[in-house]
Each structure stands twice: as structure tokens, then as C-alpha cells.
Length: 123
Image (cartoon, rainbow, N blue to C red; front, side, top):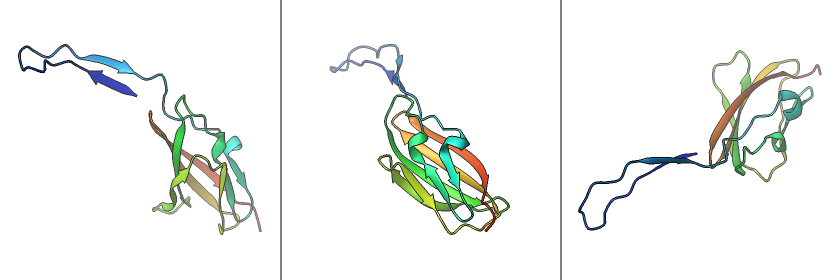
């Protein structure tokens, strides 16, 4: 995360200092590969939330959306999943169907959004 600093006088006399920029050592979370993240069967997908890398700042929460590939609108599955949760399952999916999954992982350095495509197995 980037910060900008400057100093001003308390008594009102004088100009403010030049702006100095600084940065924390952490960065936004790092999305995993699909193979490390998703476990799919005919009617559900289990998302391994603990496969995300922190980027140096602890992950605070996740947002999860999904949709069938040809659909326009996303379905909000969960908007504030705790980082303490290792995995979460979306069930009642249609067999033999392509889906898109949109995950956003948040930490103090910022969010990372990642999209994944997967297909459910045959029933």
C-alpha cells in the first residue's frame, strides 16, 4: 500500500513540506492456480481458500460469485467469508455445465480479483 506524507506548522506560519511517498512491504493477495483452488464433481465445487498466498499482509476476507458460462448476471454466493475458513462448497450445480467463478481476496494492501472457468462432471 502506498502512503503520501507532508508536514505543516501548528502555528500556521510557513509552507508545508514537500510530499514524501512511502510504501508498506506487503502487497495484495496472490491468486492460486485453478488446479490448487478447485475440487469439482457433478453437482458442486469446493474452493480451497487456504491456497491463496497472503502477499505479506494477512488476508481478511473473501467475496465469491459464480454463474453459468452463458449467463449474464453473477450470483453472489458469499460477500465476507472469513480468512479463517479453509474451504467452502457451492452445491446444487447442474451436471455437465460450464461455470465461471469470480473470487476476490482482501488484505490491508488491497483486493485481488481472479476468475476461473470449470465444468461439472456428468451425473
